[in-house]
Image 1: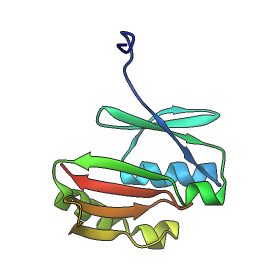
Image 2 (image 1 turned 120 degrees about the vertical axis):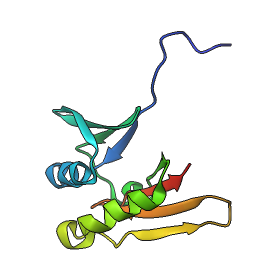
Image 3 (image 1 turned 180 degrees about the horizontal axis):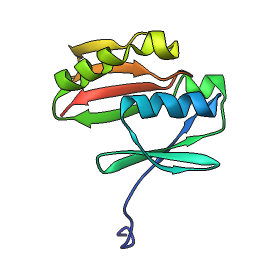
Image 4 (image 1 turned 90 degrees about the vertical axis):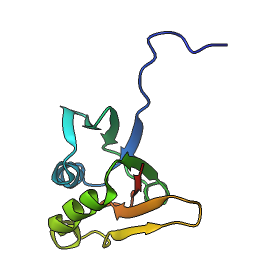
Length: 121
């Protein structure tokens, strides 16, 4: 059976213990805030995710997002310049490296444990 026409996007819900600090983190990374209310919707390229005022440690620390980029080295320079550990108290991002499964990836953790795989397209 085909997906009904008009279906356009998938959006993951990302947990936030402190909604405002999480919004500031994603804005610092350069995501566009598309909506700000009971939830916040952030976009990058043609994709988006929903930041929610909900937090469960076990879930947040097992939540992962992948973002595909054309130039991982440029993205890494951008991330390094932000000094995320100093500004947001997050775990230090990991520099781009080739992974055994064949992708070159940099890792970034948000303030509450969500792991971002920034992956070279």
